[in-house]
Image 1 (cartoon, rainbow, N blue to C red):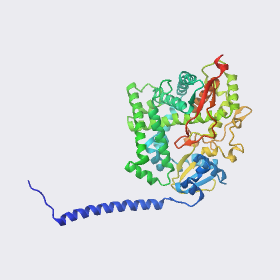
Image 2: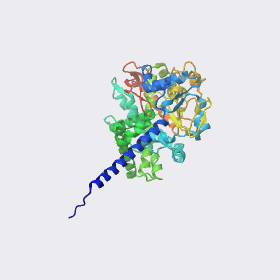
Image 3: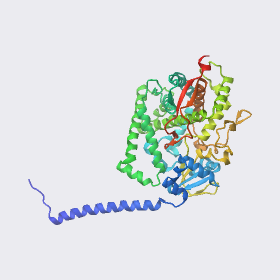
Image 4: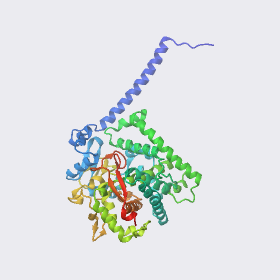
Amino acid sequence: MEFQTFSFPQSMQAYFGLFFFFFVTLSFFLFSVLIYLLRQRIWCSCDICYDYLSSNWSKQFNNLCDWYSYLLQKSPSQTIHVHVLNNTITANPDNVEYMLKTRFDNYPKGKSFSMILGDLLGKGIFNVDGEEWMFQRKMASLELANISIRAYAFEIVSAEIQCRLLPLLSSFPGSVLDLQDVFRRFSFDNICKFSFGLDPGCLELSSSPISRFAEAFDLASKLSAERAMAPLPLVWKIKRLFNIGSEKILKEAIEVVNVLAMEVIMQKRKLGYSTHKDLISRFMAISNDDSYLRDIVISFILAGRDTMASALTTFFWLLTNNPQVILQIRNEADQFMEPDQGFISYDQIRKMHYLHAAVYESLRLYPPVQFDSKFACHDDILPDGTFIPKGTRVTYHPYAMGRMETIWGQDCIKFKPERWLKNDIFCPQCPFKYPVFQAGVRVCLGKELALVEMKMVVLAVLRRFDIELVAPMGAPLFDPGLTATVRGGLHVVVRERWDIATA
């Protein structure tokens, strides 16, 4: 056997070549980072940017959204700039209409947004633009506009309330219960049955399946949202590249979420989907791409579980602090329902204007999605005169808009359902001053279903139970996430009402 030998000059040449390659690669990487940093505004001496970077805002405000609300209230144009985030934030209804309707084409989600949420949401409807968004929206709108589909959803929610939610609350008389956790389980059961035709049974008395998935989904939502708040996106991108730190945790959480999504898809294939009413069956009939179907599943869960649980949690917190509203809702229900009536009808719900106003008022103060961002395709000028350079992130802020005196008057902080009523009849407001369900072209398709579900839950619970906070609780603290989640949950004591229990 012959061995090839290398002379010293040849060895030096090889080492030199390797060193030169490494040096060129490192230089190119550092040069790219330098160019990136020069294009980013990673430091700014203005008060807003300083308070954001130093977290000075947290000395006076418990939630970032409350600080933004304060800044927007002080701004003459109701618009502010966070330069280190390249983010223009507005609570001006004229700007909102301009973004969501007049110049909708110039303010898509954008590639930057898609990259931030891409690992979790993939190419689901909340994370795409153009033809992909239009196709998914058309598919969903055709189904949700169908009267039989709406009746099907009504039946599912009614059954979940009567067979699971009310028995669960009855089984904890005088005990402490986390309503946020209950509503998350409730809404997860509903969205799975309606969207996938599957019943996870999260609200069963002896069940706590899904807890691992729920924790993973919440964690993935939180870490994805933190990407959007990072002054220097390059940091999370590098951590993602090397799979370290928070990005490693995010990847592991998404892997758990993916397991559940793929389980849904496999179960549907086993059961068959050609004759089923659920939404995922419609998409499976036209696509065999598991990755695409996975993104659809995740989007449905985000829309149906997190937003509904958030809306119900803050609504019941408001109710516990406003007993006069509870009394009004009960009195109105008594006008249209029999004392021992179990199931409420859709027609009866439609007649309850005060309840409808109370739900709208709750969502005004505590929208499940507190803000929404777009990215400008081209240079533009907003109606208030704000110049928007190409590539700027532009955010409208429903949470802050619900606290603007210029929009809702001096009592804007007050929970006041009557502001929506005229002669006891509900009077809607301009959607661009109340963009809780978005507005314009991308208005929420599930709006009506969500409102009916909320009202069904509120009526069922309030007519049968008294709800009390375990301890006095100030304004809710929110965890970072794609939807508003009350930190620590909503701990209450549930007691059956004697006048109902003995009827």
